[in-house]
Amino acid sequence: MKDKLIEGLIKAEEKRQREGLELIPSENYVSQDVLAAMGSVFTNKYSEGFPGKRYYGGQENTDQVEQLAIDRAKKLFGSDHANVQPHAGAPANIASYAAWADPGDTILGMDLSHGGHLTHGHPVTLAAKIWRFVRYGMKDVETGEIDYEQLREVALKEKPKIILAGFSAYPRELDYAKMAAIGKEVNAVMMADMAHIAGLIAGGVLANPFDHGFHVILTTTHKTLRGPRGGMILSKGKVGNPLKAPEKTIENLPTLIDRTVFPGFQGGPLMNMIAAKAVAFGEAQQPEFREYAKQIVKNAKKLADELMKRGFKLITNGTDNHLILADVHTSFGIDGKIVEETLDKIGLTLNKNAIPDDPLPPFRPSGIRLGTPAMTTRGLKEEHMGLIADWMLQAIQARGDDKKLNTLNNEVKEFCQAFPLPT
Ligand SMILES: Cc1ncc(COP(=O)(O)O)c(C=O)c1O
Image 1 (cartoon, rainbow, N blue to C red):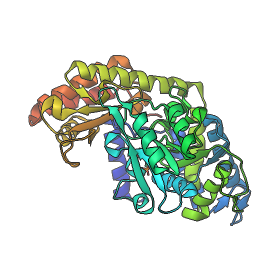
Image 2 (image 1 turned 90 degrees about the vertical axis):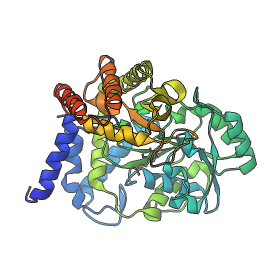
Image 3 (image 1 turned 120 degrees about the vertical axis):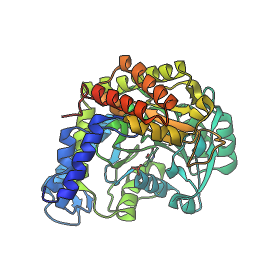
Image 4 (image 1 turned 135 degrees about the vertical axis):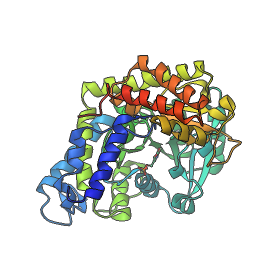
């Protein structure tokens, strides 16, 4: 690389990733093939439109690449349609909402403090300025059960256009069938934001919302799905010509979504990223990916047990997916920011996170959020989870003691040598 400054930073980042353990549940390590596709000459090409229906010439390769990504995505998730063009998760969310809900319409989503994501209508977002968001939440944070009765009451009262399932900090499974039955009563479109768990659904370890009456799945393609950073919208219904406006019916959602992504919201698709999505979806179709998905959940359950044994209070007292939310304020009398910074010093990366009805402020919340997708890619198994929990506890106990933290950091580095990044 001619730009030595950037080359140096890329190398430093590669070293950081190699010598530490990534515990942030929304991160992962992609394969070399995914990296190669992202860095390919497809980045040079403008391809506004859709395969076979473009506004520029020279599309003989891009059309094939996008069609492959679409076909593989449809097969992975059992959908009638896939739009693989959203640049990231947040644009996929906006486009999905806009495909069905008019400005001012109501969307019913998960309480943000109970695990819902910023893009589900946090007051600081553009989405919250366009649509009116109302909320459902957990009935009991000790079990994580969603309050489906309250969800139904709000749905009957508010008549939302969309009911949104999905989260970025909730460690349990949702009852999609129960939610879809409520949606049917109020004629709402059912959308599942599966950004965090798409890989677990594709790998067959968690339920697929399409099997339980949902109309749309929106997702990121990074995280558990282990593709490039990007978004995607899958839908059930009739696939029409995206160049012609269809009647606004649930059946026509695939075409309504296509038209909202382009020309409604975005310009040219990122063809290099779409090529990388196609590669990742191909990888996710392999039997090894199913094993990978299973191992993510096995590791998360084991890590949750090991943490609880060491005095960590976990929200919902465990996990059914890839992520764990721990209340370190109750457990150790400190806030999540202190834990995040302390663990950074020993090479364990995770993030501070608010817990349900958090008594502490957002920048110094009571919790931490961690997960197993990235470490599972490196080959860690259940037998290693005790060691990670040990390091976490020791670091918390030794916080402020830089000598001890340095010793722990060396242990982490040495351990990491046995678990290389994907080659
Ligand atoms: C549930 C959920 N939806 C949407 C997003 C937004 O994705 P992106 O960061 O790619 O815009 C995230 C990202 O964390 C997420 O967890």
